[in-house]
Length: 252
Ligand SMILES: C[S@@+](CC[C@H](N)C(=O)[O-])C[C@H]1O[C@@H](n2cnc3c(N)ncnc32)[C@H](O)[C@@H]1O
Image (cartoon, rainbow, N blue to C red; front, side, top):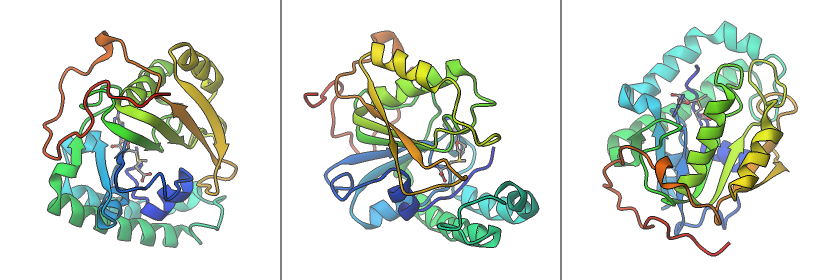
């Protein structure tokens, strides 16, 4: 799986984030963050954002370096895979590599300066108490790797993302990376989520990574309470102090 390094501006477009969404009083989770610079750039804007990724258990600062090496090394492969990309964000493969390299350098500087903002953890058992974040952003794992991660993983991952969100989870894209087609189990999963008290809607956004993938899924979590058995086995230390106590959700 490629570790990517998208920017704050890309997240803003991918998840249709408004100034209200980005209010410094709101706590945001980026899951999985990889070597993206969203949390680093959010920090510079005085925002309260946290990154979580499975890789942080193994690689931390060097993840940025790995992205630099990997994207350079895989240039030909990336060029083939991204041949149909919309030119609006990256003009060509070399531009993608340039942007990801710059973003991963911001990531590297921030994870060194503010290591407590980068938590090692994996879906579908995130190491956070229920309702820890106002907004949870999830890009390029769920649905994207739908050919490799089964529907059971998707169901459990969506429920765990909803568990840690007080208000909303936003996911992008809804398409499978290998095929460019919409994830087949999407409607079935949305019905199951609705049965658990999690509403959802699909919204168009002004960002495409692969042609035609400009849609995000929004989960409304304010009315959802995870069953006790779904709580994580281990909860991360809380060096940045969770402001939201378990179960302290706003009214739906
Ligand atoms: C393609 S990157 C996306 C990173 C970032 N959101 C972006 O758009 O630049 C996918 C990331 O998912 C992470 N990952 C894979 N499986 C995971 C899991 N079960 N839980 C958490 N992170 C996972 C990988 O380590 C990798 O960094």
